[in-house]
Image 1 (cartoon, rainbow, N blue to C red):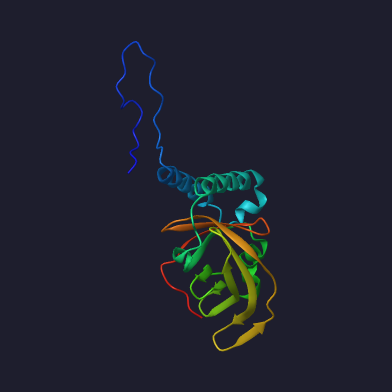
Image 2 (tube, rainbow, N blue to C red):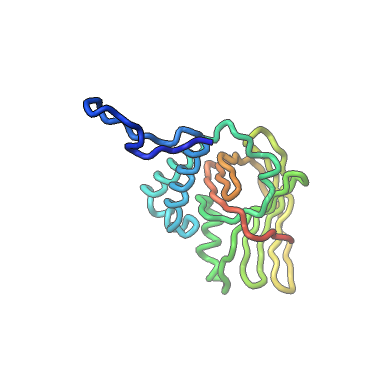
Length: 207
C-alpha cells in the first residue's frame, strides 16, 4: 500500500536544499485525488444544467475527467462491476438536460436519472423518473467491445404513468467508454463526445 508523506517529513541537512514536496506516487492514490477534484467541480452544477452556460467550468470539468481517465487508461471497466443502477451526477447530454430542465412544463418534475446495466444479461436501461409514478425508459442491448468500451443498440422505449403506458419507437446505436470505475462512481465518454458522471444508486431500479 502506498504511503503519502506530507511536506517536511523527510530529514534533511541544515545546509542542503529543502526537499521537494512529497506526493502520493501510486496510481490508486492519484486517482482518488483526481476523483475528489472532479466531484468537487460538479457538486454545484445541478446535474449539468449550470455548466451549459459556463464554458470555463465545462473546460475545467472535462480536463478533470481526462486526467482521471489517463490514470485509469489500463484498467478494465467492462466486467461485472459495471453492472449496477447508476444515478446521474453530471452530464453534457443535451437531451437529458432538456428533460430535467423542462419537466415542469408538463406538470411534473424530474427525479433520479439512471443508467441500469446488467453485463451478464447484456442489457442497459436509460431511465428518467418523474415522481411519484412516472418514468421514461429506453431499453438497449449491449456488447462488450474492449476493456473499456461497450457497444449499445436501442431496442424499445416506454413512457409510463400510474395507470397507463405508451410505447415509443427505439432509435440509435453507438458506444460508450467507461474511463473510470470504482465502488462509488463511474465516468463515461460516448460516441458523440458527451460526458457522464454517475454514482451507484442506493437502490436497484426495476421495470
